Image (tube, rainbow, N blue to C red; front, side):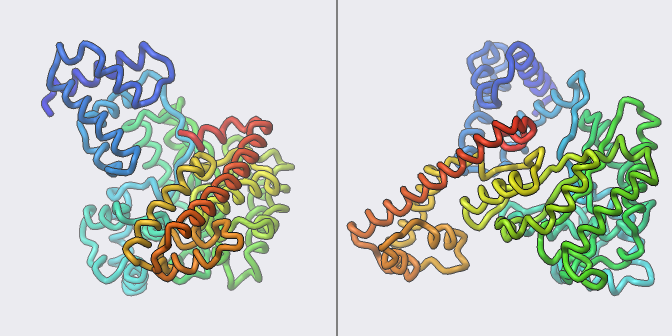
Length: 458
């Protein structure tokens, strides 16, 4: 795309956004198409039409997000945001997920050339496979830390292992915070950061264990991040930051050598936070909330939430807000809603991060499941427990018609009468889940959790 077309696109976008109030990206594209852009610059107008079509196809899962990001329109939108006269607040950013390959590589290189080279290489092979090594360039690191289009959330959590390897000192945390602030402030027009990070990376999972991590204390982590952000703030007084310690939700994410349970390790970290605030009063302004992160598919029942309840209550008495990543991943949509429900009722969260399970239309969701399974059934294909639809199918409201479920699981073609029973099971389940979803949403409205709606519906 030539410079003139890029300039015309950026100017046209800026005009529409500045002359309207709070319209969607789709509506913005529609107004660009109906503007005089076609007369002024036919080439730019054609790009708007292309992008509008891609956006429509993305919304029905016919193209990936990368197709949109690679389009020239994305470059124009990026320039608009970068040049916006006000700095943005980055409310949702994770330490290990925000570091660039350029930052990671030289520090990782030192580890791979150091006395514990073999240990690091063994751990990298365990997580990324034999083809991950050797790592000889920034490009090699970038390839490993970038999620591929056919990979899902669980894989994303695994590929974050590489940046975790370098956090083995207070200084490393300080350098990372300064680097992140510099990148966000100068490249992305961000003036305030709410950083999510782990106080402890100890885990009983072999693929998550990090050499040398036992030498890093919670104080090293918090004070290191504070040092880095504060250094940048001294150079740019308008920059601000919040440090938000985050706790992994998975059952195996605790130090099994020092603690008898995850609850015991969790309470130890809660006490460390309280102790740090008393010891370093300057942290009080910057450490005001905590979060929970990780794969929540196995955390949805009340007993899952009870073991962290008393710790959060202790922080709430100190004025902390509780944020939580929930409704992000699930085995079934109902369990995804149940996780949000319990986070609200047991943890009394102030902000829901993501909350995708509350933004999905259950009727569309379950009918699409019906369509996909019906097509497989007509081909005589079985639905095994490895199929992503297996759990949703098994937990439909089958009533007295579980013989229909057995046929679907075995790949036996349904009769027309049995297909109607399949539709009914799908229909009643969708209605039940829809009512549950609306109940949780209504209670969220009553709680006046404004931040929740930002993360759910954006």
